[in-house]
Image 1 (cartoon, rainbow, N blue to C red):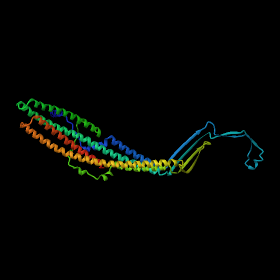
Image 2 (spheres, one colour):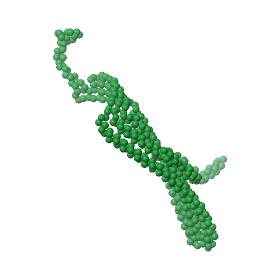
Image 3 (tube, rainbow, N blue to C red):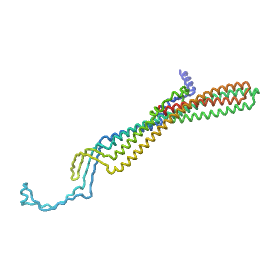
Image 4 (cartoon, rainbow, N blue to C red):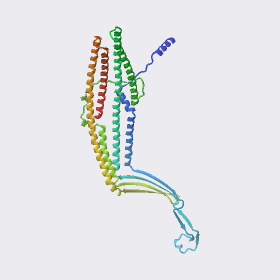
Amino acid sequence: MNLKYSIISVFVLLLPFSVKAQTYSLDQCIEMVLSNNARVNNKMLEVEASKEAKKAAYTKYFPQVSATAFTYRFTDPLINMEMPGGDLPVYDGNPANLQTASQFAYFPGAAIPMLEEGVIGIATATQPVYAGQRISTGNKLANIGVEVSELQLRITEKEMILETEKNFWQIILLNKKKETLEKYINLVDTLHKEVFDAWEAGMVTQNDLLKVKLKQNELQMNLSQLTNGIELAKMAFCQFIGVEYSENINFVDDIEISETPEMYYVDHFEALKNREEYMMLQRSIDAEKYLTRMQRGEYLPEVAIGVGALYLDIMDDSGDGFGMAFGTISVPISGWWEAKHKLKERRIKEEQNRNRVNDTNEKLMLQMQQGRNTLNEAYKQLQLAKISVEQADENLRLNQNSYEAGMVNVSDVLDAQAQLQKSLNDYTEAQIQYKIACVNYLQITGR
């Protein structure tokens, strides 16, 4: 049994070490970037911060409680009461006898210091009754702040998704180019064998053989550069989506396309309402109105009621407490002159914002039309690239047959092979550009 286990152990140790490759699809990459990307995380924190600001604004509806304690000691008493001395009648309990008293007691006089030290404490709870609508308006502005931060988060997420798509498909494109290049290398290697056999038979010159060898060297150099480029692209993409890079990481997804542009078309006027940018513009109109209302509220009377407690210990060691209720009215009379100009300034800013909103809406409509045009152009390029591949493939077949029949030289075959490689690369790029154009059009139409 020991010999059996030893043989098995040696066999296991001799097995080639292999690590399972990690393969990620586009959907998995999008999920990771939305979870790990720093920009998205910061926008999420902004949403949380705006919610806390909203909660803080809501506290203004409740009474404002404050407490103050004050202790003091002067170098000299503020009041120093002097009492002169003299004979004082002895009081026997009958007030009528004070005028005819026959016995007296001598009082030497005294000085009584007052308000030399003491303690004052006050606590109040003030409930605003009317503050020129500034409290309710402030809460509405806080609500808009939450909505805007959430819209900004959605915009950032869509931007990250589009950027993820671009980077992901760029890696797919490079991998496809590598596959095409490897097939091209196989074609040239096969051609080299044929030319070498023909050269040995004296049917072609050594110059033809050297042309093929030079092409082989060129392709190997291109393969090395492309391989390094793929690794760098994968490293950068791993950092972008927040996953640790490994040589065994692969990104794979279906590149085939079956949808035509018409399948993505929508009415742009209706789509505009679904754009986060449009929603933010509408919120900005509301925000400007509320800011004007806040400005107006600063020049309106403020009314508040409250209760309080007062503690005084200024005469002796025993303090006294007092309760109170109060009401206040504050009228900013001197601010009314300023209000005329400040409110006019706010109306001008409202008008500026409306102009900016209208201009931006027109640009958003133009952006959607440009996105549709780009989508159509990308689809046309895809169809042309597909035809070019078919033509290049047929051209290579004809040149190979003609070369074997001795009707063309080896340079023509090399050119045909190079044209096929270029056509295949162009077709792959057209597929990628069409996919990106689709995602971009979906994004700018609010989907």
